[in-house]
Image (spheres, helix red, strand yellow):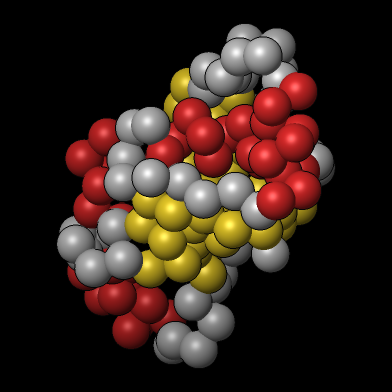
Length: 132
């Protein structure tokens, strides 16, 4: 399922367990920076978690925000920079129903949390991932 960069493999081996995450649209994700790209079918995310939230970004097609019991936050999202607002609305509907794979961005406060999130999510939906 998921693919880890070699430097991330050692960090993952040092962590003795996989962290659990749950959907939490109210979690503060402002400190999350782009850490990974995930190749994933948007429809798989919708099937598992429902439709994404509108994160307020004009170019965003939506976001899923997750948090762990210990407070780590991760976000997965897709940006479409070159669409007019009308086309963006139409595209959003089709995008989240798509069974084709797209590269979505994984954001987290640091690479370790992003790695743990990618491991958790790749156990839930079919995806591969790589550092940005």
